[in-house]
Image 1 (cartoon, rainbow, N blue to C red):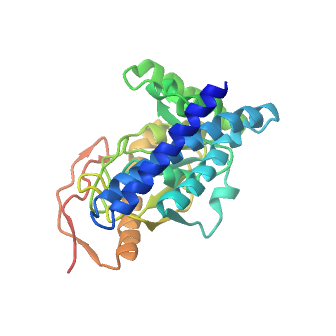
Image 2: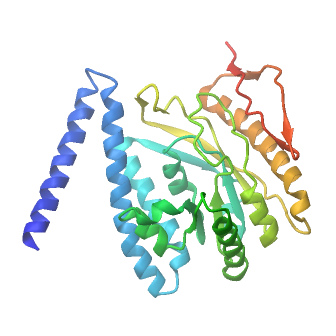
Image 3: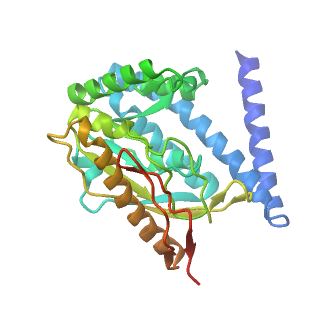
Length: 306
């Protein structure tokens, strides 16, 4: 045991020294800051996941397992603020995060940094959906399983439907909210855009008859751009929008619900990004195509006004 602890101690010390080295190197080579913050982020994620495993066990034993992801999210927020200088400012003027339960929270998905956004905004008694392969990832996967995450096998349509059905039941019976990214994948966009929305989150909300609460995060490519090796300290604004009721809606209403929610979020995304950058953003005319009433355009021809 002593040998294991020694090895762990040396590993942490070495990792820390390497991270500090790249931070110092950034004064000479600015792109070294990308490596430094990437190393700091991975360490923060691992540390939070280890904390999450322990907290999930303890909280589950005392009947508060549904708060595990909130607890680990706040720990990650703290680790990242201290190690990278990156934070998300939450605008929730009507306190929906703490007063509306259960609900299906949805948000735009930009990069891996959205994990920190979740850590900053994640409400109590809420869980996430995740691809099933994450279940086998040490620490992170263990934490997600213990804290009640809903795993979906994207390659197996039947299992995905069953997982959604189970999620709707858990939402209703346990008053447990769910956070989902309807774009389905990260956009890595440099401008305020949204990929086409998948309808799973909306079907889930309608099936559970709970409100949808959109959460919009300003485009933060000026803080993190993987393609350009940019990773800077900074603060990103995000806003919690008014709940959208699904009472009385059926699966026949999902297409229109998806389309209108996406349009609402896109408008707010542009406004938040303008505020974050201090620049006016205009959109050129664009062709919009529809499939089953769901918008497919992402607004990719938007540009920053001079």
